[in-house]
Amino acid sequence: MKIATWNVNSLRVRLPHVLDWLKTAKPDILALQETKIPDEEFPIAEINQAGYQVIYNGQRTYNGVAILSRKPGSDIITDPKDIDDAQRRILGMTMDGVRIINLYVPNGESVDSEKYQYKLTWLKKITQFLKQELKAHRKLIVLGDFNITPEDQDVHNPKRWAGQVLCSEPERKALQEIIKLGLQDCFRLHKQPERSFSWWDYRLQSFQRDMGLRIDLILATPDLSCSQCYIDKVPRSLERPSDHTPVIAEFN
DNA sequence: ATGGTAGGTTTCCTA
Image (cartoon, rainbow, N blue to C red; front, side, top):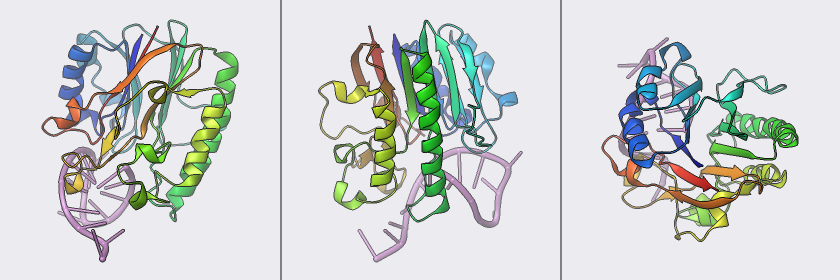
């Protein structure tokens, strides 16, 4: 099974890129974040035409998640118990006995902001939710835009980013708490090129200068044997790209 | 030294 995650930063704008990418990459599952589109306006027909089923949990202007899949999913979840969040950031389903949880983790803005506290609280609640999911599913994949760099090796300039949002210790610790529940960062199960990133700021020509971060992650239980995990930088190099590029994992 | 760009029921907010 080939599964991918991609923050598209507006599905309305990025739909042509997504459809092209489906054609060439042919994933079984593609999890999207920042669709920024209300459910009643979701482009179902175009995605079906491309040979994919789709479920979504969206809102206007901000946030929004979707899962495209070769086969229909079951046991769909959008609002786990006790999370109580109006922002549309969570979407889960089961396909072929594999439980998939797609997350758009809050960005956090800056470590001294209210949004940072919201991010940490949200992560704590999600950890409890994932603990329950792990009890029920031996084959579980948690993927999406985590808005956290796991380690300094995931940062183009660790000195400049030290202590900043996306790189701060409390966030990294929160991510480790999730991993410690019994998940693996698929990307680090394999030998990877140095300076592997999944996001580059639109500003300062960051992509051209390779000033990026690896904040889009695929976490999986060891019961799912991951044969490879890699980043496809091509979509980020196209005209009018998302600021994120797809991360892909393949399982036996 | 805190810039810059992109998207959105747009003149600010979010990333």
